Length: 605
Ligand SMILES: Cc1cc2nc3c(=O)[nH]c(=O)nc-3n(C[C@H](O)[C@H](O)[C@H](O)COP(=O)(O)OP(=O)(O)OC[C@H]3O[C@@H](n4cnc5c(N)ncnc54)[C@H](O)[C@@H]3O)c2cc1C
Image (cartoon, rainbow, N blue to C red; front, side, top):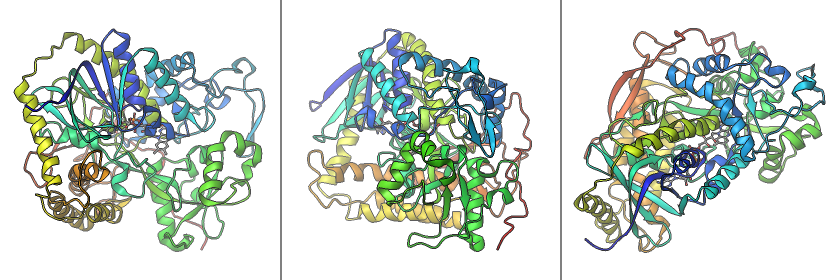
C-alpha cells in the first residue's frame, strides 16, 4: 500500500459546528482522545450564522411565565405535524434548560431580563423585578410561550465561539480544511473515514473506535438557500453511500419565509417575533387574513405557503429576481432595530443598500433547513452500522418531523451534543478498534481511483457546473413549497439522468494539489443522490404534512402516512430504495395544529 498519513483516535467527529463541537466536548470530558474535522476553521461553521436564538423553557420573562418542558414538548410535536419522535422531543425539552444554564457558565453572553418596559403589538410588557438579570427570551417559532434565548441577534456566533473555546480548553485535536470522502466500514461496523486534505489534495486515513457525523445541512442543493456555501450535505451522502445506512425523511425540507431578495441571506424570524409585519404590493398586512390566530408567527411551513399563495394571487411585488413581498420593521423604532436586530440592519444596509429603520425589506420564502438526514436512534446511533453516530442538522434524530420550529435546531445541536455525546463516551469505553489494513486499503484505493480517473480524464467530458446548475433548477422548480405528482415524477426522471451524467465528469483543470474543481467533481454525484432521495421521497408520499405540501393530496393522512421515509442507496444503483418505519407516538395523538387550515384568504384586491 502507498504511504498515507494515518491518524488513530478514540472518537472521530466529522464536522465542527455546534453539534460536532458539543459532542466532542462530552467525549473529551470523559477522558477519551477526540479528533474534530472540518472543511473550514470551526468558528466559520454555519452555526455561527444563526441570529435568532435557541429554545428552552426557562420561563423567566413575563411572556414566558408558566412555561415548562411540557409546553415546549407540545409546541415541538405540533410544529412537526406529528412527524417527530415523541420520546426524542420529550428528552430534548427536558434537557434544553439545563444546557442553556450550562452555557451561561461557559461564558455565553445571553441577553438578560431588564426592568425597562416594552411595547409589543400595542401591549405594554412589564417584567417581574425578581427575574431581572436572568436569561431573557423572545417570541420565536410560533410557540405558546416566549422561550427563545438569544444573545442580541448573534446567538449562533456567540455560542459557537464559546463552544470552540471549550474545545480548546479540553485539548481536542482539530484538523480543518479537510473533507471526509467516505467511511471505512465493512457493512457491519464503522472504523473511521477516508479524508482529503483540501490544501494539497492528499488522502488521509482516520481510524477511530467511534465515528460521528455532524456535517450540517444540504441547503446548497437548492442554489437559492439561506445556507452557507459549505452546506452541501456531504456527511449525509458519505453515510448513505455505505449502502446500509438510510437517510430519514429527506423530502422534509424547510423553506424560511424571509430570505432577502436577491442574495437569499436570512432575515431572522426574530424580526417577525419582535413585531415585524409582512406586507404585499399594496402595503397591506395580509397574514391576519390567512392566519387569524398566529398571523406572521404561524409555523414556517405555513407562513411560507401563505406568502407563495398571496404572490400567486397577484399581490407580489415585481422585481428582476421574481415576485416578492415586503417585511416591515420600521414601527419597531431605531433603538430596537439597532440593538435587538442589529445584524439584520447591517445585512439590509450592506447587501441591499436599504435602511430598515425607514425602508421595507424585500423577502421571499427560501430553502433554509434540512429536517431529513442520517437516521439514528434516540442515542444518536446511525441505523445500519455499529460505532457510527450522527447528530445536528446532518441527522434525523428525529426532533423536527416535517417542520422544525424556529429556535429548536440550534438548541438541538447542543442538547443532542450533550445527550448523544454522553452515550458516545459510554459506548466508546466498551468499543475496541480492530480494523484490518486490507479494509483500509480497499477504501483508500476506491477514493484514490476516483481522483486518478478524474485527473486522467477517464470518466468522460461532462461539465460539473452545468449538471449542478440544472440540479438546483430541478429542485427549485419541481421539489419546492408546492408539489405535484406530475412535477415530482419529472424531477425524479431528470435527476436520474443528471446522476448518470455526474459519473462522467471531465475536469477543465489539472485536478492536481488542492484543486477546488476536483473537490466539486468528487462531491457532485453524492449531491445528486441526495436530491434524488428528496424528490423520490416527496413523490412517494401522497399526503401533505408540515413542509411537504402536495397540491394533489392536500390533507395530512394519519392512516397511511404516519411513518418516516428511509432512503437507502445500494451500490451501483441509479435511484434510492425507499422503506418506511412508524413514527413513535408516546404522549400526543395526532390532532389539530391550531394554525395552517384553509381560510378565506386575503381581504383586499
Ligand atoms: C442563516 C441561518 C440562521 C439560522 N438561525 C437559527 C436560529 O436562530 N435558531 C435556530 O435554532 N436555528 C437556526 N438556524 C439553523 C441552525 O443554525 C443549524 O441547523 C445549525 O447551526 C446546524 O449546526 P450543525 O453543527 O449541525 O452544522 P454546521 O454548523 O453547519 O457545521 C457543519 C460542520 O461540518 C463540517 N463539514 C461538512 N462536511 C464535511 C466533510 N465532508 N468533512 C469534514 N467536515 C465537514 C463543516 O466544516 C462544519 O464544521 C439557522 C440556519 C441558517 C441557515
